[in-house]
Length: 257
Image (cartoon, rainbow, N blue to C red; front, top):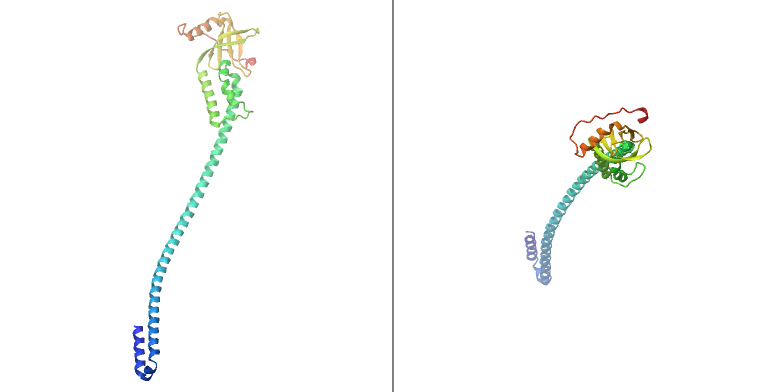
């Protein structure tokens, strides 16, 4: 529309000025030609600008979407960081609790081991000898044995189980020790748990009983018990019919404790 107005204005100027038309025809023709080229360039520039404008708008939309996506990811990362921090705090609290429990367990095992060392003299010698490999594995409480906590606990539990089983049973052992006369002999010994034991020699001429004390087991000779003790030995060896045994249970005296 603007181009049409400009053409009309040019025609009016040409009609109203015939002298100018005749004298400057070549100049006017050149002017029109340049003017048309200018208008064509303006039109082409306008078209190119519209295309570029559309392209820029597309780029703008793409950048805005990318910024929005980055903001979203940043927000998610912040939330994950907060979650990770909470999880780390929880794990640290759990670690602290586990460490406290482990230290408490270590102290408990150490005390239990000390008690077992103190009570080791109360154990019958044969049982104590069978438990010797377990004690060597643990070491005493003054030694630093590089033994995992689980293995230490398993070892102590195995020892306690063996002691408990022995205490609930009647056990026949062959054992050598000396009596008041200082003569060392081999006896067959009936251990009734960990509380009392009765011994007799192979010929049935020497017998007696034994009880535990803080200084170890002490043995008292009492040859009148030989027949009953020998019968008990035969019963455990399946050489005699089971029956009740008449054996004394002496009370501990001051010197025997």
